[in-house]
Length: 202
Ligand SMILES: O=C(O)c1ccccc1N[C@@H]1O[C@H](COP(=O)(O)O)[C@@H](O)[C@H]1O
Image (cartoon, rainbow, N blue to C red; front, top):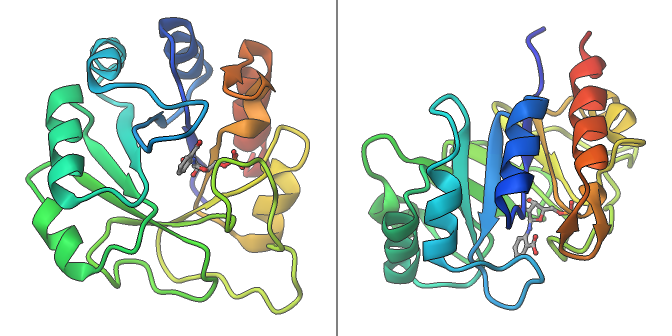
């Protein structure tokens, strides 16, 4: 089985980005959804995105924003991926589809098909994304979606192995679990998370 895909989200500083990239993250996320302790503007993100090597996916995170706003942030910041946490439908994903852009659809529903709305990756998240609260992915009746999907919501270096073993996730996404205070990343926790995630599939 191939290695886990690991996304570290909610980065705000050049140091955060350097640490995540050096640790071996496959993707790094920048929050453009308003009202989060991790929210940054497009100009700040642009400078951070410029420091990310080509092989690492850069993702803008949105919640309840219009397609026009998502498109503007994506273009101004230069992120190559767009992660939507709102009520978007297939027509919104189609409108945001451009050459080379990766579309992620976040949902708190459990049994879904990857790609149903035209997204490239499905993200199974907690009902309150970015809160650090886990959801019941360990439920006995959990059914993993088919295809490429990321698990998120309350993950940390101490539980990521079990979470992947139980759910069979293709990849993982974390924000709160690699912070020393809300909205403040910890280099040690980022390194520990990537190391723990890498160890799951040996
Ligand atoms: O991180 C946020 O503040 C955020 C705000 C709005 C939408 C999504 C957000 N983050 C996403 O939530 C998960 C991480 O959750 P956790 O903090 O690890 O429990 C991840 O998908 C982020 O992209």
